[in-house]
Image: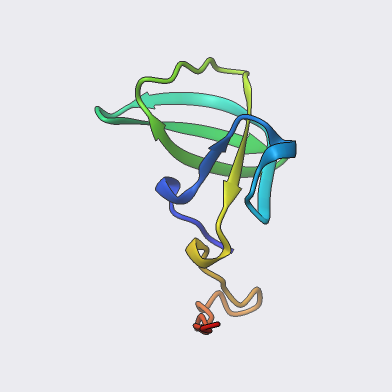
Length: 92
């Protein structure tokens, strides 16, 4: 699964989150200011994750954060070939 940095949504209360996919307790390695937003370079075990968040928020290296993901924003890949899987769009 792949996700764009701007599609990761900061969660302040994991128990109140409405996101079906959640990444919890990521450790911030680097805070990169880019203007209107900042990039948080984080890790969870050996997985590196970059999230774009509002530049008005304050973060520190070593701080832990959690993010929510809307499944429709995610991109899915075949684990063997690396090819992107076609996302089926369903309407209700």
